[in-house]
Image (cartoon, rainbow, N blue to C red; front, top):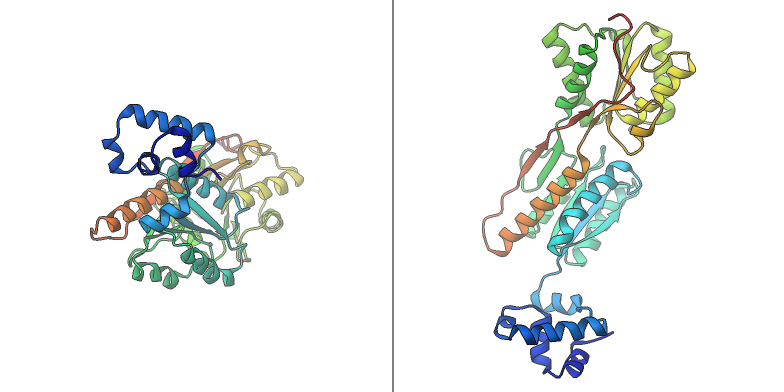
Length: 347
């Protein structure tokens, strides 16, 4: 490893002068621009890389952000993580990701490992079922800023970011209503999920506002702890057995929507000619499905970027000894209209 002493020997300047230049402290301003340029040229030629570990020991700062995700292979997590990384990269902070692999028993262990690495902030991408907010509150006691993405925390020391689920499903059913659909089938999310309650509220409120009748015989609910392709197919088949005359279907999420399209196609119902389908999430691949899926985009990368921005603000406030207050943001979803929706055949 090339050291500052090596750069000093090749550049002809003292170790102290080279150290001030390469560490880019305030003292470097007293050194001429010509000298600084020469030292940097030598450093780059030799392949010098700063010793971040040593720098952290001197400054008592790690410039790292801990990020816990419930499943790094889940498209929901990967898009948020990309937003976090894209925002942090220019500022010099480095995210350290820990994957729970959907095992809630690993949460405490991952948190402990990140604390041992002296992370300056913590972002938790909330599992739809599990997030120990009491454990997150421990960060506040240690003066470590923390943000939860995907779980609304209206009070307490932990900041939070969520999508406006109610507004999202309202956009979805309004889109179908404006296309002339009135017999709309609905696949609700698992009752255990907070998101399910909020998304159903958006549908009910819109129906009430415009006088749209919800046929309870055309409402089914995911029974597992989360959605699955197989259950999406089974629930759509159940709807077709109950009453096949519906002309549109709103699914809890994109995975269920894609399964619904499969089941409808298998039953001889063409999408969107015979039945329009709307999902929720805009996961990667939804635009390439057959047909491309109309869906509600959660703006996941934006949520990740916003989480990283809040963490930076809170860290800055902590360093400057300013009062640190939790911040709570709700991201507006966006309806993405593609080819899985069209005019009602009765319009």
